[in-house]
Length: 577
Figure 1 (tube, rainbow, N blue to C red):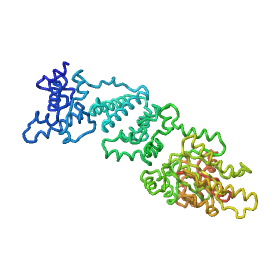
Figure 2: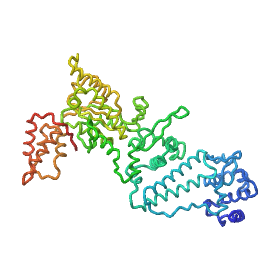
Figure 3: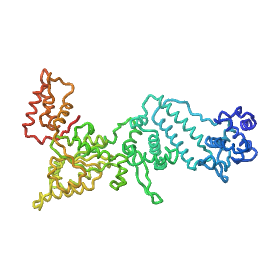
Figure 4: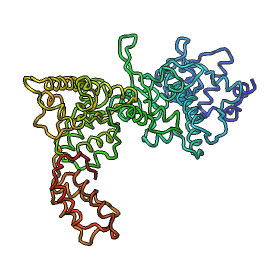
């Protein structure tokens, strides 16, 4: 008891053995000294009012100015506020303290007995692997949870918010120092930089990652618990809910998701979890980062219906009519947090967080329909599966009706297995969308109408993004027209658009004649696909020459062939800028 006796007997409290460990002012240390002297005489609880009046002037009410000293001792964790013999964990205002009592905390008693409560952390060394790093981060999550439970009044009396915050500060600094010393990339830190997470998003992510590693359905999946980890007060709790609402960054970018669960009180609560692709990237950092996409790609290779497309461009990279771009931008904005909130409040959207859109792209071949669909997929960071509708009859003679349903069933199955929401692209969907035969006398007409009825039924039930391409809109059945949210026309490019297409498609590293005239080429009315084809054909011709220099005449010859041909139905290739 050397430290206790030394502390209560020392006249100048600053010279006591434990003063440096108290980390408080001389006045505050003198109050602790007063409390300890009373405590060893059997007076466990001390009235705050009595203590202030005895230690400071009782004349007038000047002692009220010293309430801040008591508040600070509570925050530091050296004393505990008492009420009817029970410890109060929640914070009180200064004036509330006046009518209460305080008692030494277990932390103070341990300090008086042992002489030190300093937290001795191991020597700071670089992380040897990502598991060491995660252990420190998971310890930080545990501390944050202890601090949040303390604020709610559920903490162990042996804990103090001051010491918990001190430990959190030390651990946070230790993690930062170890990360700086570590030369090898740490997968979680790299992920944070890539996604540009702020501190609150990092804490949510780490808490959910801790749950994944523990393998349970623990407390950190609960929405309210996650919000408590990142909030200091009630105002922040309300503000921070936006981080876990539909349309928030973590959900919009498919990093986390949630399930809605009916609780025992009849309400609905949300249980959050990390997406499978993200988990694979963190748990198996040496494997490919595109685990989910590769998995979907592999699944597609095992079947015959769909083609797995790999977009190379976003919507910003393609030449589009301003009205077309505006419509597609509105589709993309469905994932915006504020837009989603409005749609949900208006009853337009349910709890589904993704985009719901059924779109028809119509226009001449080569105007960029398929390219735009692929660019939309890349903009939304979605995979895209394509089905060539012209094959449905030739591939499945006699079973066309059955296989229309199979398109959608197989698409759902692939999505479920790969745990992604691909875009479904139905190329050349004319026969599905065209007006149905009246009377339907022949067996072929009956089969065609039945096939279309099934297709109509599947369109009605479809959730997600579906894009159908067709050359003609005039022949589309009205029943189908009503089922599509957007009908977007792809016109042949105007002169200005053609000029841009020529400028961007021409080979950059090639040699051109001195007076090469691009505007002269743009005068000819070609689609983006035709311009692409003309450039490729010309390149093959020029490449075999000893002096491989492009001339205007080389391109004009190929343009004449293209315009003079009867191949208007060239497959849509899209165009990039």
